[in-house]
Length: 217
Image (cartoon, rainbow, N blue to C red; front, side):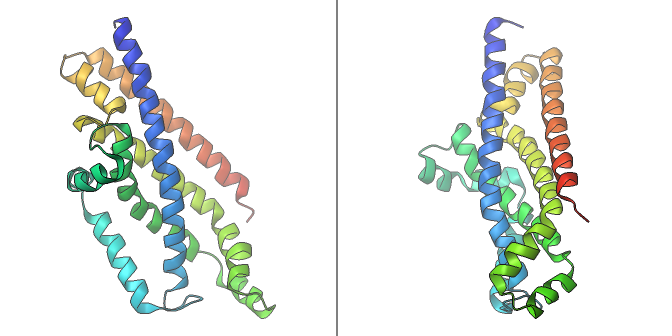
C-alpha cells in the first residue's frame, strides 16, 4: 500500500467516524422525541390522540419501508437544498439521518412501552404529572433498552454509510470501492473489513457496558 493510499485510508476512516457521530446525534435528537410522542399519544397513553398517533406511525412506517439506496437517490434534491451538494460526507448525513430516525424511533418505542405500568400508576397516585412520569419513570426505566437500541442504530449507520460511500459520500465504503474493488486489491478490502469490525465491536462493547451499568432491575 502506497503512502498516498495510507493517507486516504486515514481520511476515509475519519469521514466514516464523522458521518456516524453526526448522524447518531441527529438520530437520537429526532428519534427519541418521536418515540415518546407515539407512546404518549397512543390509545392507552398519557395523552391519547389516536388520529395524530396513527398519522405519525404511518409516516414512520413509510420511511422505514424504503430501501436506503432508493432513499439516498430520492433525497438528492433535499440534500442539495440543505447542504448545497449531493456528494460528500456532509451531504451523506442528510439521507443517513432520515433513514435511521424511523428505525431508532421504533426501537425506542418498544423500550418505552416495556416500562412497568404499575410504576406509572404509582406516580399518578402520588399526584405526579405527565412531565414527572416522563422524567422519573419512562426515561430512567427504559434507559438500558434505549442504550442497547441506540447501539444497534449506530452499528446500522456504519453499515449504510459504507453503502453511501459507493456513490461518492466518502468514508471507508468509498475507499474500499475505489482502491480495493476497482483495482482488484484484496488486501485493501481486507484492511477495510478489519477496520469496520474493530469499530463495530468497540461500539457494541461500549453499548453493552453502559446498558448493564444503568440496568438497575
